[in-house]
Length: 194
Image (cartoon, rainbow, N blue to C red):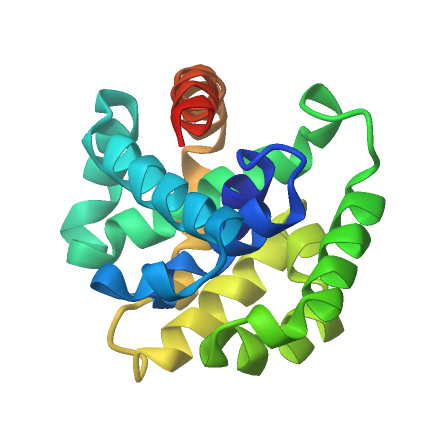
């Protein structure tokens, strides 16, 4: 899962959301240096990633991408799935996506001193391009994948992955809907134990 899903699956606690959002940049036991709720978010993020990578529905989607994108297939799937969450946001939240994103950006600003250096670097770019809302369109996803490809020195080929998104659009959307029910259940149960 990419940023939007990780934030959404964190519930209503802003610090848990922040921890889940910035967890990719936190290595090993470094998470123990953060406040307890941020630690919960980081641990939830790790559980979500483990669950996602081993889920048969997610693996079905990555198989479509593997021949062309190799080990980047899972990264691309994470972005595809955030697209379907954003596109169908009203099925999952009573808040408008624009409002939800704005509230999250504000919570990052309000808790700036707790953010990792990587997150502090990304924050102005993320807000300027409104990443969370941009996931809702194929054009937005295409831009995200293009920029991700640039960060790999164009070796990943992700800049063209929107082609596969469009080619298998209905299959990916159906798979996401089924998968996300399982992920939501697991995340809710895990969050209750942290």
